[in-house]
Image (cartoon, rainbow, N blue to C red; front, top):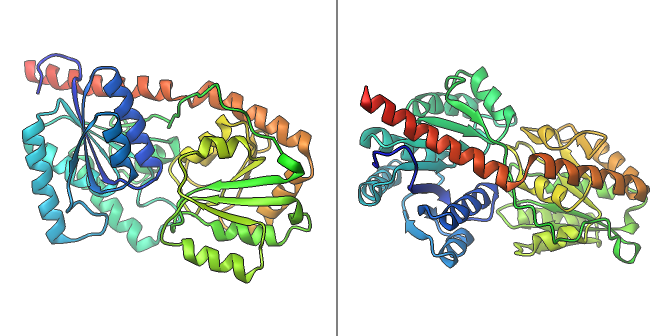
Length: 380
């Protein structure tokens, strides 16, 4: 470890390279830090688009094939040893871990090697909406592994407060840094209503935390649905199930667009953004919609209410409440002036609170704080 008080070599560890909020977070942080002159290394378990994107920026990628999401004693032991070997080889000033499995194993390695480390929580595994048995298990695991971290960054106050409530870590160790995304002033704002068609878009993986089926159920209840085109962006293990549902409901105005690299453009052509979820951390897709000047209708779970101001930048609905979703969609579909007003409010709220520059500055400050604390302790 360097003996000065600034971070120079940073080692990111993340379990999966799939398209998701945590991966975008790591991509944006690592590429910007690399641009600023930091020596950035990233370890990825399951390969995905993240690998290719980081390599295109010249960032050093390390593959840890045994680092998988599922609990497996054999794989977990192998992953621990591989991460330990990488830490010894890279000799980072600080290690920053993302996602549960990478967070647990990475923090343990750092504890054994006496390496400063920060764990970023992209939504606790024991959040509301997860089964009781799983919640109790993950609370116990996180209480143990929290002791190995110098700081824990929560991407929402909801997650920080949840950890404090369950006594996972001290308030001093838990810090909130809301997610942020690049400003992209050049993008066109939404509300285009191209050809008088109201485009309703949901950008999310087809997985258990998300609930695209709820959106389809709500659309089926609307007498004005012929005015709409529903665009679902993403892939995942639940995709085929949702496609079957759309066919059974005879929803011919639903497009499954798969994984896309032009999400910002799709949002700029949309009218309304929806995110129906069973649980969340602080979703980037909502920030992307706000940046595009779209009203957002979203499930009031996790830290969503810290981004969406109910009745001003969009609407918050209870988890699984199909009728509320249908009601608010109908209001927005039939009121273009309200859509435009909420979209403007959303854009301003994004600019004031959730730009990437704010997140980057606060994150670097945490890294430096950890290093300074370590140096001070060493001097004592």
